[in-house]
Length: 207
Length: 106
Image (cartoon, rainbow over all chains, first blue to last red; front, side):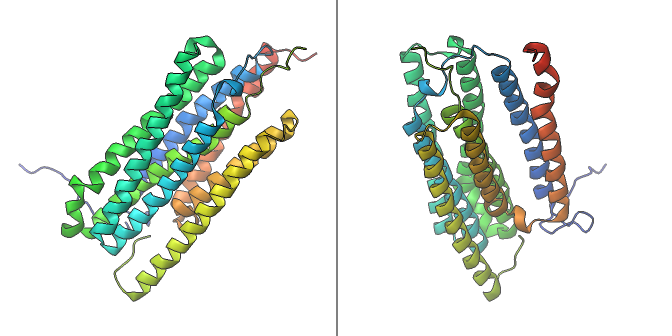
């Protein structure tokens, strides 16, 4: 009895012009766009449908969020540099950049942890308001993505990096795929940052 | 983005690195601009439009250069265009259809 297996090919398929892993990750990212899109839709509907929307951005820390934006953008650059190193088959350089990407992801999570702790300390948990519920939902889901990306990047950066010797092109394709996910996570934050931290005006202050 | 080892390939990667660093610089500047605008206290509608326009430029830079969308195959571009279409459908559909029910405009 033989088992049917789809062979892994590093070359582009003649019908799609792409290798399978790249088509797969872009389809996955398309589904992710819809996931975050539905959350943004819910947020817009809640916000526009509520004339008595309470305090929003003023409850959040813009300096911490700006720091996290800088951290995440920098991690996107180190990620893409890791891909360049994988293409050059330079293991030392690759590990340096991939390690930096994972470390910057960890910095993002630690800063987010401080932010969350401050919210609870100041009695602003998710139940405080619709805005805080949205804030925790958005940033919590985003943080889960950062964590997942860190786990994948750590695997490719360290235990999984052996493949650079055995099958360098397949390895470079894997790193590019992990990079596409990581950049997407960065892209989501680029929109979350202004929407949550900069644009959520409360009602006009009563004088 | 598949490449084979060789001299031309090395030059190609060096060009990539220069682009990545330029995009990085632009993203940092745009981040500072968007935060700075917050402190200008613009009226609500211009503030939202400007901040979202800057986010759109930043997001496009990440997608085009870090995610290589600018040099990607047509199939991926078609897939992403379809995604953007449905994304705006999901984003605006509920608000445009339900808003008048929730908060009637007289």
